[in-house]
Length: 268
Image (cartoon, helix red, strand yellow):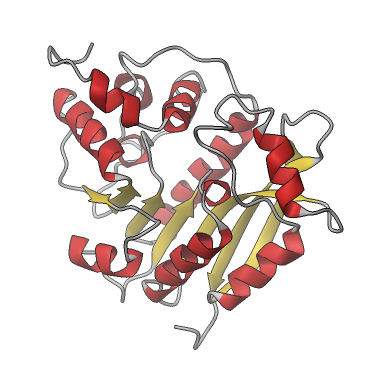
């Protein structure tokens, strides 16, 4: 345990998926900045229950690591990670004058803050923003946390949109667009299926095969064209799509797509 205090009640409320992702990342060889901590992920997951390895996370993790590195090298000074869980990028890619904002459920944020304090991780470049995407106004939350809406940002939605229903996805993406000025970038992962298949049927079949399908179900799996429409309607123009690989859903053809998008001019 990373502290003497028992946290069994808290652990029962924390997303198991966020822990599984972090535990998997701890075993992946990844880059880091000169000032960053290459052991950050291993330190953040100390004491978590071991899990199985999820191979699709390797490609997804590398993609988003590259997006963060690209944002830093291109001069973006703010990086916003939505559904951050136990993401270690604020520690791994710590860089002078770069500020990270992490949004996630208050319960998860409470445990992460405890872990960061135990690690003696400096917090001057990182702001944890407790946010329930089902009910909170993301635009207002970021504004209150000190995010500068007039300064370009990288917005990251990794492994998040599938866990929210379509209405909540739209609200989140629109809220991020309201904080995005010219030069900002959105990077996201999507769960997609072929057109002509009922999305609810696909989601039900996929969740029946996932270990956390009942407790933390995927709610939004759509054809890529439907996603592109959602992005346009919420003020984002997708400029890169990587149709990555088939996810482990057996006979159900569900794939992971990795995208980047930029704000549509005048849509704010």
